[in-house]
Length: 235
Image (tube, rainbow, N blue to C red):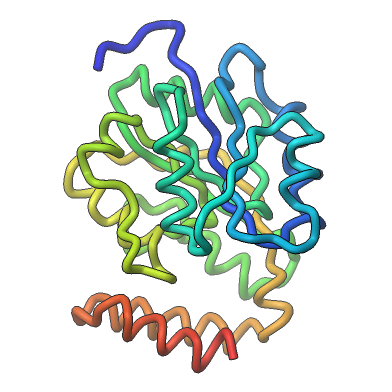
């Protein structure tokens, strides 16, 4: 695809009962980007019961519904997106100021996919230590909380998210992007919520995430990964 100065971003946010966060995120996106660079913000809701879609629509986002599951939701958002670049973002992750300019600059420098470094919204040294590794440009250090930008045509060529993955869909897709594109880790940071660590326990959750990574490296399929997650994290 030939790039031009009119290249634009479609921001895609999968949600499920995120009324407590979506308003803050949408306001943050508006304050920290240039309107000319943002084609649209698409909130893809998986069946919220807390008013997330109506709140997002009130704040100017396009809202669509989808079957529950991040992979399905993000694929549907990508299908309807009209921007040249897709930017996938979790509802509790906040990009840096001028994030749109950083992404577009990377695209103009022939980087067709990438993410930001990550920080947690906590001062806990253990989580700050793990977040430090997000600066390393290796697929073992990637995750959906770091956000993800990708050219739309590359997204389509690689088949998008694998909907067999109920969890780990971000990491699986990013692994394919590493094999087929120039992946860039931008030096600025997104700030993501540590709420799951606070709910489950920092050491316990990081241990189980480590086991899931290991299982994936050993060739365990998406069904087994989800069963482990459901037993040890979601239970």
